[in-house]
Image 1 (cartoon, helix red, strand yellow):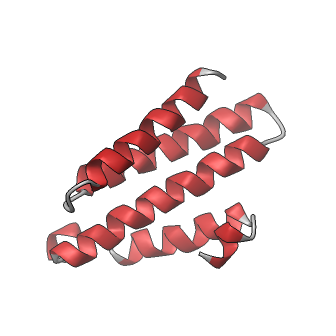
Image 2: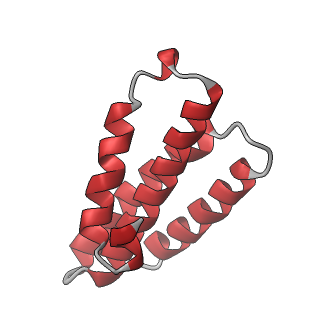
Length: 102
C-alpha cells in the first residue's frame, strides 16, 4: 500500500477499512475474496499498531492497539490459506505484547 510504505498510517488504515466494508458480506464471498478480506484486516491492524506507536498519549496508544488487536483477530479467524493463520497469529502476539506493555 502506497500510504503504508510512505508512513501515512492514518491514510493506509482508511484505505484498508474501505476494503473491509466492500467485502463485509462474508456469506457471499468466495475463498479468494475471503483471503483478500483477511489480508485487509491484517494490514488494517498493522496500520493501527503503527498509529499506536505514534500516539501522543498513553490512552491513544491503548485505543489504537485495541483496534489493531480486534482487527488481527478478524484476520486470523478468516484465514484459509495454509500458513496464513500462523502469520496472523504472530502479528496478533506482537500486538498483544505491545498492548500489555502499556
